[in-house]
Amino acid sequence: MSARNPRQPGVPVYDEPRPKLRLLPAEPERPRPEPDPELKAILDDMQRRYKVQRTRITLDDHDPEAA
Image 1 (spheres, rainbow, N blue to C red):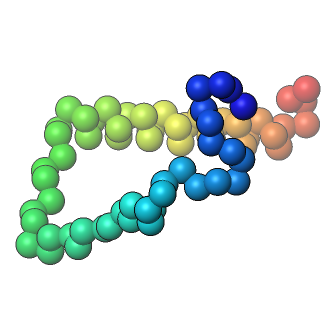
Image 2 (tube, rainbow, N blue to C red):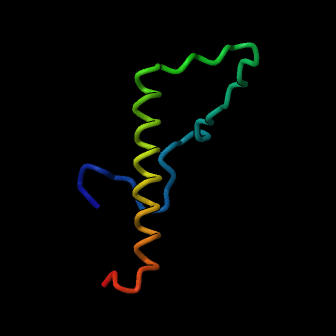
């Protein structure tokens, strides 16, 4: 406990009731933004590379001479 913080352990920080967080309802008529073509191309390339690498890893596990 520091000298600057006179609060005791277990004592609430707020004297009044704690502030509440609220969720606002989503706007149903709001249109979805179109994806950026450059970003989509990058994500597609990343996904393709991941699939290729994952396939190589799973195939190496079944090779008896892999070690």
